[in-house]
Image (cartoon, rainbow, N blue to C red):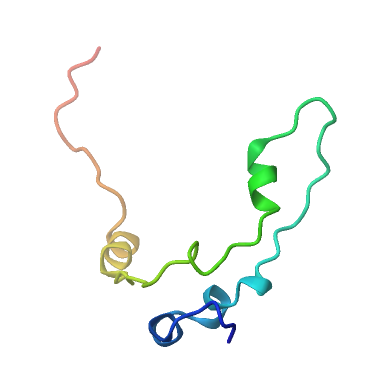
Length: 81
């Protein structure tokens, strides 16, 4: 672990989120006249302050039910001619 991480972060987050050195964004060739600010932001390696302190996982109950039953189907009366 890096000295930038705290004990709380070590226990609740996966290694990928703890070690900011592992965060490498793929570089894209930029147009000379039209550079994006997101590419400038992506050059900066995140510090421990930028990383989340906790993760809140969500159950897949809704998605599993939707995949089994399918999306909502409107079976009401059609009044268009």
